[in-house]
Image 1 (spheres, rainbow, N blue to C red):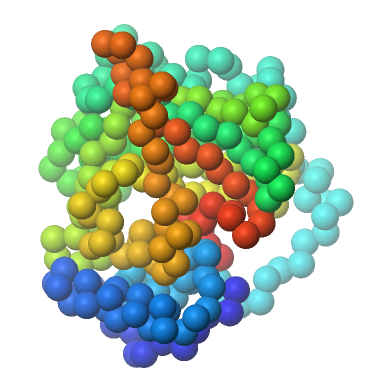
Image 2 (cartoon, rainbow, N blue to C red):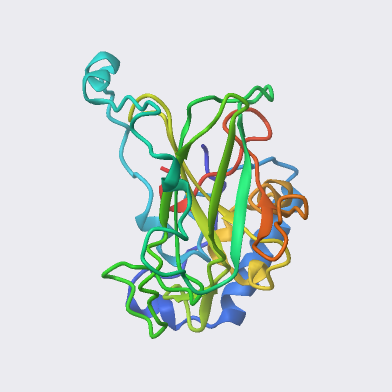
Length: 267
C-alpha cells in the first residue's frame, strides 16, 4: 500500500515516550483532518503513522523476498478437526479454578469478500486478563496476574463460517507510546489458512470505549468506517441468563469491507 506523504515524524527512540497525550491527540486530529480533506480511501492501517511512535520499526523497509510457492507448501501447516480440541475455545476452563472478571461469549462468522462462509478456518485468540495483564515475560506493569487465566484459545470455523469463544473481558493496559498512554480493551485474532502465507492478524475492540480517540494504534486506521469494523456489537441473544454477556463480530477476509489488520503486522 502506498503511503501518503507525512510531515517529519517524532523520534522513535527513548524520548518518544515523553510526549504528552495532548501532543499525540493533536497529531491524530491533524492526520484525520488531512485524510478527510484528501478524499482518498484507506481501509487498512498506515504503515508509517507518526502518532504511533514505533510504527516506523514495525514494517519492512526492503523489497519483499519472492518465495517459491511449492517450497512453502512443504513446510505449511495443514489443519484438520483432529488438530484442534473442542474445549480449546473456552478460556475459562483451562485451570482448576474460575478466572476473575466479566465472563463473556464472543462469536461471529468468517466470510470472504462475497459474503460466503470460510469453512475450516483456524481462529486463534490471545488477550490480557481482566486487570489488563498478559502472561508474558515482557509485561511487567503493576497489575495482578490471574493464576486461573492464560488468555489463549483456538477453534475451527464450522460449515457456516462460524466461530465461538468463551472468555473474560480484558482490561485496558498502559503502553510506552507516550506518557499516560492506555490501550483500549481488545482481543487479538489470528486466522490461518492452509499455509504460512495465508495468515491474517487483527484486533477486536468493545463498543463505547472512551480510549478509542486517544489510542494511536486504533487511530492508525484513518478511515472511520474501517475502524468501526474492528468494534464488536453487544448481542443480548448471545448473552446467557446469569452466566455471561455476549458479543458478535464478523471477520471479512477480502473485498471492500475487509477487516483491518493489526498495525503491528501490517507489513
